[in-house]
Structures are given as C-alpha cells and as structure tokens.
Length: 309
Ligand code: UDP
Ligand code: MG
Image (cartoon, helix red, strand yellow):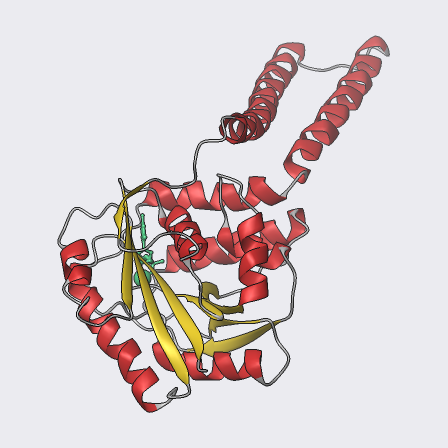
C-alpha cells in the first residue's frame, strides 16, 4: 500500500493562494512522487476573506480536508491543530503562499525514507526580497537565542519541514500554549537534514504578520526556551550591589566627586535596571499564568474530519 504524505497548510486570508498551492502540490505528486498518496489538510486560521470557500471548492478531490478555527489564533496554533488532526505516514508543514516550494518535497522524502533522517527541513540560502531591518533583526535574534537557550536555531531556517510519524507524535507531546514551533522542532531532537533553497516571494496576497506579532513571536522563542534572562537579572542585581558598595567605600574614603550627579546617575541606572528585571520576571509570570489556565491551544469552528479518523 502507498504511504501517505500529508501536507499541513496554515492559512490566514489566503483566498488567492489556495488554488495555486493545490495545483502546485498536486502536480508534484502526479509527476514526481507517484509512489506516495497525497493528503492535504488546510487549516483556516479564522480568515476573514474567502479562504474557507476556496478550500471547500477543492473538495471534489477527496484528498483535500480542512479545519477552520473559530478566529485568528496564530500560525503556531494552526500548525498544532493540523498536526493533531494529521494521520499521514509523513507529515509536512508548509505555507500557503508557495514560499515553500512543493518541489522540495521530493528531496525531503528521500532524506527521511532512504538516508536515515527523521525529518528534513528547508533553510533559505539567501534573504533576497527582505528589507535590511528585517534581515539585521533576524541575524541578531538568532545570535541571542542561540547564546541564551539550549536550542540551536539554524540561520535561515523556516517552518517548512517534513517529519516521520514518530517525530510528529513527539512534537504533539509538547502541548504548551505559548508555542514557538521552530524551537520545539529542535527540542524534540531526532535527526534533521537541512536543505537549502532560494527565497521566493509569495505568489499572491500579502503577509499576515504585523510588526507586533513578529515581536511577540520573537519573545516567545526566547522566553519559552531560555532561563538565562532570569539569571541575567540575578547577576546584574549582584553587580549593582557590588558597585554600590564600592561607591560607598569611595565616599567614605572621602574622595572628591560631584555627589549630586553621581546620585542622579545611580538613581536612573538602578531605576532602569529594576524595571528591566521586573520585565523579565513579568514575561515568565505571564507565560506561567497562560499555561496554568490550560486553555486549549486552538478552537475549531468547523471541519470535515475528526481527530484520529
Ligand atoms: N498564517 C496563519 N495565521 C496567521 C498568520 C499567518 O495561519 O495569523 C499563515 C499564512 O497564511 C501562511 C503562513 O502562515 O500560510 C506564513 O505566513 P506569511 O506568509 O504571512 O508569513 P511570512 O512568509 O511573511 O513569514
Ligand atoms: Mg509568506
């Protein structure tokens, strides 16, 4: 019997991309991956345009399935929903805008079926078509995350990844609400082959990410996997205490100094420092708060399949 390759596609306002994605994916399986059965699972992340109708229009093809979330819950939640409903022997997560070329699936499947890997993931060779600020921001971000956390993010890595059933099930065991899928993929371990590809612009529509959302995502990555920011606060606090003791000693020794400006400096310095520390603690607290509430990661409005079907 043919093995099934399931494509999980989170979609937020992608009405113009759905058909193009379907055609491209179906084409690859018709021509290059005949030995596999395709299953498509579109996860409509509370789109306000005709995304869901576009998916339903494809359902003449029985390989197409959908889950529609009750509102926009974010790409990470949509991916989790898709993984939970998946049942393919191999599961791939892909963007709807064709920035993740389906043609790469062939090499990915080869890595997992023949070369002994558990997953194959795509990384951008170049960041063509991206602004300088976004590029610089991501270089800095990867440097910080890799220094501060136990996970190692591969520069240019994307969410485009094909996994064995075993690895998919492992990813599903990490049921935290504040999700940073890229880090989770790394954290579960297994052997991953990285495959480079040229960055391609999205085929239609526009990116659903807003600056605030990107910032939120970046923080999730850092705080979900790093204990260092908290530890950093402890070290800075200790440093502050030592510095103030030295300062006191210098004062007692009667050295000349413009006391007023020094005091002002210290007040501002420690004020800022304390605020930063409170901020770090607040970040963790907020996350703990969200986790203990144990709210569901996603809520479904409608779908044509049931879990574990
Ligand atoms: N997406 C989603 N929910 C969101 C934002 C995005 O499901 O809240 C989907 C989107 O439809 C696309 C993928 O996530 O399939 C990547 O989004 P996008 O292309 O906007 O991001 P970028 O390529 O700019 O990182
Ligand atoms: Mg995109």
